[in-house]
Image (tube, rainbow, N blue to C red):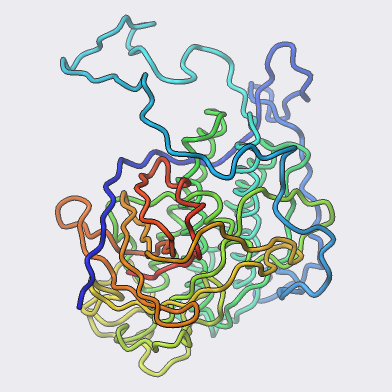
Length: 484
């Protein structure tokens, strides 16, 4: 029987971005700009470090690292980065800002305008010279996380091009033009990494060595659509909390590119390119939990992050995107290539839709597909299993998964403008199930769709897109659900 869910209403999501350099303010001792004779934007000059591993040439001149695999050494440092002290166990919810009272009933400017065609208000609109540099620990840690993301995307996009043959790409329905597009997206990541490095300065994280889960072209593409999902959503979640509005501006101009990448990888995977009306924003610790599992090791003295690593939530019957009938996906987790959160669907299966030329059922690369049988649906029984905290993950196995939550009682579904709860039924040791919720954002826009975050919580806390991080102390385990 379908279990009702508690739908948490939400506000509108704000814009997003990616990062850049910093301008020289009068009297500053910062280095001079290096961006060209007519630029007023300054930055700390950065020379990209050579990769910490030998580079090889693979297929068609594309390059990748000689090693992609797990870390086998002993970590010399363990745990997330910490400040001089921690002031409280969590941040309590507060009443609304008492100054947030503006409401316009006239439909025209209410206050004196500081200049022609310039309504009163806004931030960073007083004519001061922009400084494109992080302005707080929050900014530094957030943009450092973004840079870790850019580095893995740069390596990942190149790796599949170098790893797979022309014949393998052709079999997967991707010709030379598609490979050229992916190469261009890798070039975009090089620019994004340069931008974020300049905005962080000398302690910007460096490129690392990675451990990937895929063995086929289809699995590579599927993995990229999942990885760019948490890359994009991870920025939407923090961008409007940055102290530096200038950094947020440039970040938005880069994350807009990331959104396009995610859509393209969905098309190459045979998924519909757009299945929601609003994209979802995630706190930094959600993105870091998903990303860290694929970083094998980093160069010595690489800047560490302060964000939390949650235990993994496994969706045992997560829909296999390669199936003719997604509802036939095995119920034991065997149709995911591994046990990490964003591992792709197994592609070498009987009953594949990859080369099926049947409208409503085929899933080869295409501009768009309509599904006669959806990947998921309201009322679907979702089988869950979750890990205990205390596992070593991330670069050099030097981060430890943790949770401050009590026993799990709810499943939280984060998508679009909503965070929706459904009750968890526990069936055994760290196992249980729930039912996919039903509901709508506006009109006929279903709340559950796309590639999305799902988690176990001990409380059905009311949160909205601007304060979702208040849920972190209540998260038992975190996963990724392939709803559409």
